[in-house]
Length: 296
Length: 285
Image 1 (cartoon, chains in turn green, blue):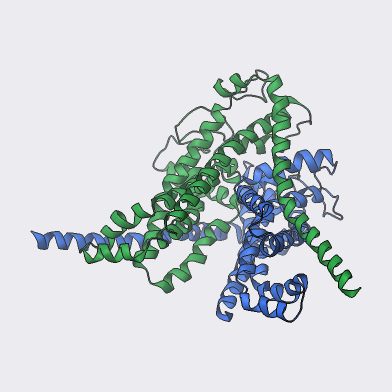
Image 2: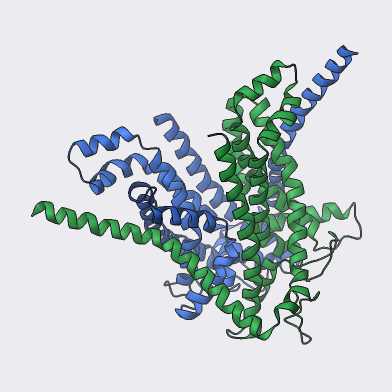
């Protein structure tokens, strides 16, 4: 009897735990349902061809245009600037910590570097707007108060730990024998790093870049504070632009009634964002798997 | 000739060493400049009055009381919702469903969830919680959204903590006749507790800085009261900061600096506890 009730109890506990795990699946289903159902209604009112080819995004004005390209170009531009800051710095950090620095220095500095990713992003936005932009304006006097350059730059600083810690994992996984072989042939540590280690760790480094870009594409508050709210199809980093995420925030700050076309535009923008981050993440995971198999 | 090549090679190697050191500290130097600037701008504004006053149209009278209390409320509610679910899912995946088909699907799914931008969770909360479940822009809608957002973080980190529990401890418990659940509750969880607490703190410190999903769910920018129940309207510190930064008057930027000092103190304090627990645990094993 005692044993029987114990078995029942164990069964109940397992089901409760399984339900907790199921919650994550329900979250994904919920996200897909919400984005797809609202976007579906949106695309019955706005043609998908216009959405993908129109070069203006003005859903909140009298003359409405629903071209996602200006928001995409804003997102692309800020992410590109961010990764051009984070990749060289993050990769150099990973190489330095693995090939040059003392083990002890590495263990101390890694959690401190993670601090960069712990700072709330609205705080980074403030930094971009009030410190970086005025500083850059002394070099580019024509630079606007809101621009993608300082927002992208600060976002780059934020994602340094993503690039450095993932690249670090990839570089640590390179067999020590390769390192010894190169050094024994008389190569310096620098030559070993760039001609042996980095090529061997290339796929892991690419993963770190993809995941960092995905993080930058979805970043919201930095660009909402510092990059402006003017959808514009441009690659000029000195003028105000608007990203997909900023647009969603802009609409949410105002009073938009549910079941209106304006309300649905944020879901159409959201599904575009979702598709891009989903592709970036999954290429990343796919690469990651492939690369882990290589050394097993 | 060969000697010269050697010299150049060494010089490059040495130069890269310093460049590496520079890069390592580059981000941190930027952070230091920024924190210095914030302290310079905001420290003078920080006072007991600033913490205990409501938001106002007049910058010199405005305070962060409603935002601070909103942050506290949302943190407690998010923790209550996310911690049991996150730890439960982690236990299930690590102890029961390892390498089963369902386990693999959930695992892949969690990897994907962790990469979804936080603002997308906001859209989920807006449609499901705010409108379909008719919660409006309440604390409950906000906390449920943030709980879903940090669930994958808690699960992944808790699994790491469970993995670190020595196999011998688990075998010993089974050998004494304990059931699987008894083993988990009395042996595995206590052994993994500091790792789990670390993961929860890290996840909550991430949630505390989030503004975007809460703005989308319908949190307000101007709230002249302290929330009294889970169905109250609310605002949080990051949204208050965003609101002040968006205004043209310089005095509001000073307010934003002062509010940032408060927010950073909370975030850094939580991270410090997490790092301390991690170091303590390392010594133990």
